[in-house]
Each structure stands twice: as C-alpha cells, then as structure tokens.
Image (cartoon, rainbow, N blue to C red; front, side, top):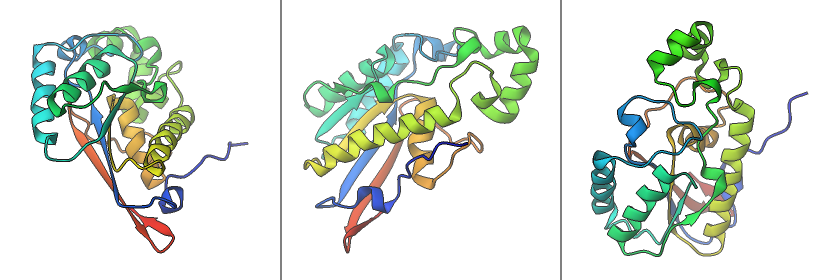
Length: 212
C-alpha cells in the first residue's frame, strides 16, 4: 500500500505572516560535471568555471534581499553557498542534510558513456524513466519525502520570520523541490536544472491561506 505523502500546496504555507520568496539553486559546475561523471553522493569540488558561475550568481542575487542561505552537506553545494554568502555579505550558510543529492546507485562515479557500456539494460531504463530505472538508485517516493522534509524546514524558517531564503542543492533533488509544488510524484518529464540555475517560488498570504 502506497504511503500517504504530504503535498506542498497553498495550505502547507498557511500561517505565513507576509509574502515570502524562496530561491532554489543548483550548485556551480564541479570537476565531475565537467567530465560528465555521475556524482550522486560522491564528493567533488567546484572547478574554476563553477566558482565563476557562483560569483556571477551572487552578483545577480545582490538586489534580491536574501537574508539567509542553506546548503546541502556535499562539498560542491557548500562551496557554491559559501561563495554566494561572501558575495551577498551574509553569515555562513547553514547545512541541511535534506538538501543532499540523490543516491545514483551503480551509476555513481561513472560517466554516462561508461554507465551505458557497463549496464546497457539499466541505462536503457534510465533513458525512459530517469533514476527510477536504475535498480539501486534512490526511489522516487524517498526523494519526494526528502523534498517535503526540506520544504518543511524552509517553511518553518519562514514562519519564524525569514522572508527571502535561498538554498543550494543538486540537480536531482532540485527537480523534486520544484516537482512537489505541482504534486508530481514521478521523474518524467524532467525539468532543466543547469549549474547555478535558480527557481524562485513566491508565496503570498491570501485570506487565511496562501497563493503560490
């Protein structure tokens, strides 16, 4: 029997005292991204291009009034968040484990070309179903639940008075931070999530509820 999962809808944000903006950010290009290596939970630093991307994003965000930054514990996200904090003259980012990347299972540490050669059947399923097609990758239901948990932490910070929050995460988890706001529970269709790409969610209190 499928477990009942929360929905990130207007009722979820009921109680916010003022309009709130959430900036959901993917980390800059890492050394593995440049080689098209699947990272999953493995740790890789940003390369020079990734650090430049983060600095440029910091400049773009400078007039957005961001008050706090939260980050995945993985190095590529933490380094991006630290660069943003310096650019925006904010305190060091807080780490949220819920923002960690998905577990990519047997594809971790392989380039996509290597994964295709080593696991041809799994790769064919991956092309159809994304990570749900990789047998030992993190399941969609688990990622959905983790995205809900991350949103709960962000929503609670907003309920405590923060009005402009940013978080730095990863392409896989970022997909789900956005998808859960539409009630989507499957990987397909995929959303574009380039390095240092940003999704913004604006929540406005309306008559005891909220408008997204």
